[in-house]
Amino acid sequence: MSIERNLSHSNFKLKKESSLLFALILTFTFFIVEVAGGLITGSLALISDAAHMLTDVTALAIAFFAIKIAQRPADPVRTFGYYRFEILAAAFNTILLFLVAIYILYEAYQRLNSPSEIQSLGMFIIAAIGLVVNLVSMRLLTVSHDKSLNMRSAYLEVWSDILGSLGVLIGAIIIYFSGWVWIDSLVAILIGLWILPRTWILLKESINVLLEGVPENIDLKKLKQALFTVDGVLDVHELHVWAITTDRISLTAHVIIDSKRDCETILIKLRRLLSQQFSITHTTFQHEKTHCSKESEKCDFIHS
Image (cartoon, rainbow, N blue to C red):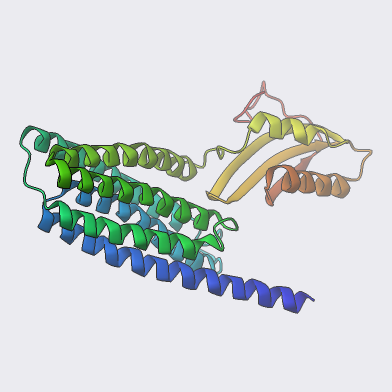
């Protein structure tokens, strides 16, 4: 039975990697086409949508390489393995995209004051192809997007880019029938404003992980209160919770356990509680017999 489960898991991993790689190649190819199309047609909306598609390319690349790199075992130099690569890449990506979005908004403002000629038909055709590419990529990622945080992130990136392609399509139609070329700049501004908050949120999350902050989905006070619900726990201090990467959370703590209780049994209960209620499976507890003297030493970064 375990052999069948292992085979099923291996098949799922292979299918996830192959679908992710194909979506990455497809999206990157059209990214190049859209940049060239934007330059040829003079459409800033196409170029801004290409910048948005760059977020998809990067997200797909990060997800793919994170899967590959995560398979590398930990070594004496990197005892936690290579999971942090995902966060470093995400931080670099968000800084780059933030600057790109600012440039798009500046360029759109300049064009509002001095509109340029737009080849709306070419703009429409390229945006339509982009929409098809995004729909195909989304279909490829649908199978596994709910089983991995990386895949879910990539899936949402592609889904949001569909909205950008639709915006360019609508803008091209309006320009074709009305001749209002300023619509192109307006669409570019909307896409830029769509990119900015998403990159800012992702950058904050990346920095929080790099600073080994408490993950946003963890309430430290509730977690500490939950630890005290285990009968036999007298005190918890030196409590630290951080993430190696977005879905790998670690915890360390000093725990004072009633001397009349079996220490190993209590620690097993604590680990089970953290796994079931907070999805924290990498834990390190230091069992102590006396309370920490906070007057003589600061033994806890968090006092509650």
